[in-house]
Image 1 (cartoon, rainbow, N blue to C red):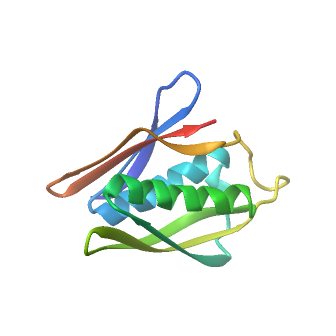
Image 2: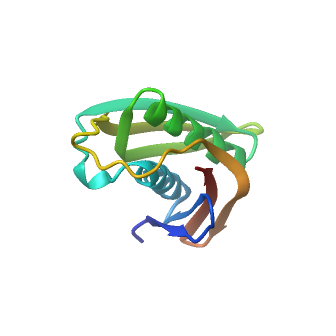
Amino acid sequence: MTGGYHFLEHMTDAVIEAYGGTLEEAFEQAARGLNDTMIDLKGVTPDRELRINAKGHDLESLLFDWLDKVMLILVADGIVMSEFLVKIDKTNCDYVLAGAARGEKLDLKKHAYKVEIKAVTYHEMSVKQEAGKTTVRFLLDL
């Protein structure tokens, strides 16, 4: 299965549903969807790599921490990311994510800006795992 994401209808915010054949692929696609909410990813040349680690007591809190850190790099550091690779492990009672992201410095002359993201929220957040498919859903406050 090839992963992907799509935007669901919402009156004021962005709701993204991302999916993949594995939990890791769904988290990777969720991060792509977050970046694509703010910047058109077609013009991104991934010329640098960043390491991003996240953790959570359950899969929803892991997804929140992951997306919150990805958003912080995009908004605060001005790096738009288009490629992601994650590994998720469970240790004792927590989940840990070791991630790598590839992207480039945001340049408004080159990159098509869409909308400002204020925050990742827990509202409407879900992680559903089925045989051969994982789907995550989350809301971005715009």
